[in-house]
Image (cartoon, rainbow, N blue to C red):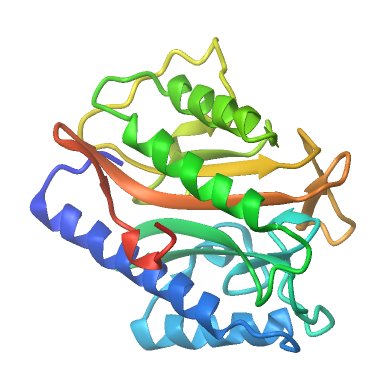
Length: 253
């Protein structure tokens, strides 16, 4: 989406603030012994109060308000009464919503409670790398430079990236042009960022796998070679003064 008016910018700010604060509140609400279904229902109540709709449900019929992935799960994890959170789990919550005709997307991985499995370095690397990648975006800069930064910084930290998951345009729908903002350098991607373009930039920093596989539930993604993945994501507008991060209230920076 290209922002063409102050009303459109305000609309994107409102939905982005909603997904950011919902992610922040869900992260704070998560506790050992809680099911991911219970955590998702907590988020669902926030959606209802705001009059917002679940973007993955609206767009793809996803059976949940939010995506909650635990440990080896990379993304699109189904909220379940059978999945009980434990101390030290690597948890990812992805919150995307539509509100008054505008869509925004954000997500974050965190360690639940004490870091008994030493997931902390992976999580911190993902947050740091996302920040650096976003700060490098300018009007007319190449889209593939985002992936180059993410991949290089991941390798410096001793990790790799998931190649077939990526950021994307957002605004009037959940996925728009540019349809792919990869986590690696794609030399054939010659697209450039435009002024006032709205995008969701995200990391998929991996300990082992470079690709994903889909579980039998048809939704949940895991690494093709196992391991763990941390994901962080912000919705932003590209301006002449630099990226305007709209989901900063999620507290992951």
